[in-house]
Amino acid sequence: MTSSRIASRVQRIKPSPSTSAADRANSLRREGRSIVNLVVGEPDFDTPVHICEAAAAAITRGATRYTLMAGTVELRQAIADKLLRENKLSYALNEIIATSGAKSAIYNALAVTLEPGDEVIIPAPYWVSYPDMVIACEGTPITIACPESSGFKLLPEQLAAAITPRTRWLIINSPSNPTGAAYTLEEYQALAKVLLQHPQVMIMSDDIYEHIRYDGERTPHLLEAEPALRERTLVINGVSKTYAMTGWRIGYAAGPTDLIRAIDTLLSQSSGNCCSVSQAAAAAAMNGDQSFVASSVEIYRQRRDHMLAGINAIPGLSCVAPDGAFYLYINCSGWIGKTTPQGQQLANDGDVVMYLLESEGVAVVAGVAYGLSPYFRLSIATSLENLDEGCKRIARAAAALQ
Ligand code: PMP
Image 1 (spheres, rainbow, N blue to C red):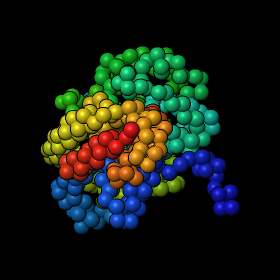
Image 2 (image 1 turned 90 degrees about the vertical axis):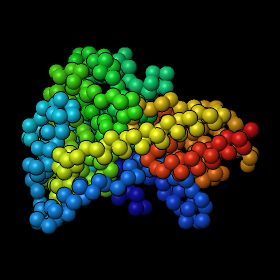
Image 3 (image 1 turned 90 degrees about the horizontal axis):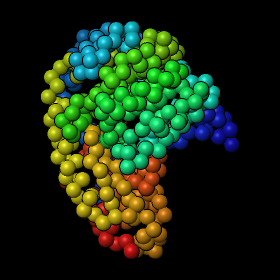
Image 4 (image 1 turned 180 degrees about the vertical axis):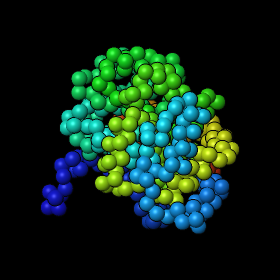
């Protein structure tokens, strides 16, 4: 049995459900089926040219060697400048570490802080990786259901009730993957009031979708609401979503020096620094012309409005308008209990997603993966034509239900 060679902490985690859904869609496509893939959570745009040119220039000037473990001074200065300019947060270079994607920053922050059984509060629906990362670090994910009726957001009283002496972290993701819900400054203030009473709780603020907003609002930061939390807050961000740079793998953490130093030590003995060429590209992204951000958000906005109208016109489905990110989290409770033309009764959102894939070739991800059912997540990071075709097929699937 090969599985017995694998440590139990790894046996307990599962592959990312969005990767599994994309794999299933791709294998059906190879079989010749026409598939509309609405799974992928990455911008469908190319990285802006000036960023690519900065990478090419870095290669030419020989920036192809190991860098400082925490990232080049140039990159960390660009991050510090960005945090000050956009978030009104002041960080010194030794309070910042660049990592291979925000994913690595989150994982390593958990790895350097969790003792077995330590609790991490994760509001649901959540990004699929949070609970599994906690489990991989031998912690205990404590998920809190944040229903549509509270805007998919954590309420202060829910937070207060979930905190125990074992609580090490609260993870906040605003705007959220998968719902797009974003906290207001006032909502952050209310959560901060609770957090101030529990000094053992650190806060991980995953800001990766901060720029993708539909209401014209700037995304406020928990630390603007309550600067006193700075000593126990880790800011997580990266260039993947904002600058269409998912493949370059640059993210970062900014926070107290003991945490940053511990992450630096762990990374120095595991993966080493992140790619030198990508670091130059990421610095150019943050320092350079920002017009790509506004123009891509405008395109996401058109898609969001178009799809919201389309989905809300389909019997049995409903979707609240997301504040940000590039997903729709669609309530499919009206389909549960219905019967497909093949005679199958849809018992849950996993059945709904399989039905959409098998009957109409539409690939989406079941809400169960994000910890709140019955929903499915649809990505709008794809062309309007693709989205239109997807909507037509979902409407056909709805019409065939009894
Ligand atoms: N946080 C959230 C909420 C995400 O959706 C993602 C990407 N799917 C990440 C972090 C990781 O981004 P990356 O590692 O590409 O920087």
